[in-house]
Image (cartoon, rainbow, N blue to C red):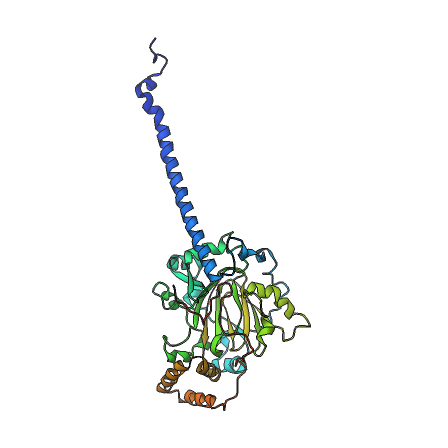
Length: 410
């Protein structure tokens, strides 16, 4: 009997070709799926390698493989709770206070304050600095997230940092996550467009350090972005400068101490440099009767708020959620005597050029003030830093990012 007698006409006509075609299609589809998974796996491995490398460089004292970035389990603690916190810093509408009033009420006496509506007209406040737009426009730019043991900048592409910040194995779980604290954003070709999105609030437009020249002056402006628990440990801003810090997204917790409190009191020897550790171990002690100094001023800064920090005030700052902001240190006519005193000692060569340019600009009043300070005929201001106070730096605690450190790359 013919072996094909039981086959239908379609089967006979198409033979084995028809029966093998679905299998070929499945193989091709499976190949695509396998290749796609392989690409994803390769991308994830590369990402993990970049993050581990950045972590090791930024905090060499912690083992990444042993889980020491999460050894305190702060991510599952009540660290971020502000229910019992008393925010005692006044809020002032920047639209309703003159420069003269601000100087008399806050800058001259050296008192911190929170300003509202100081950044309403910035493009950064109107959508330019959302996570989505920053990722779109600067995703491939490498921002500084720390410094290594030799002071060189540790950098990550923004797209990798944002993934890190939300990653369950990294930023979402780290005790003190990496923190973008970048002082060269306005100078680098692929990020300098950011400086078009903001300008100093009107109350802080005077910038006397600018007379020293961009190449000579110390670092003074930073783009900052970080997830919950990242932040800056206790520090004083450098060279007795004052600072303004504008928050565009998220919330920051601040603790501010007036000038004159010894470093050893506010930041005991041996304490980890993380803001999360300070708020966990030291802040509760500041609320006890046995605390040897004044308790800090507590503040929760919200979106659209600008905080003024006078020179000499020690402060610790921790992000309560994902934050995006910008901060600048400045020297004005009011704090010039203090800044000159410290800059003359810390950067003597720069002050020579600075004084020459101030004179050329017609600021003979400041030239005379400098001479009076050098002669010891001007008394110290509230913000003048004593040698026993906390070290001067504007640092990212989680990443050892310091304004006095180098932003150079290896």
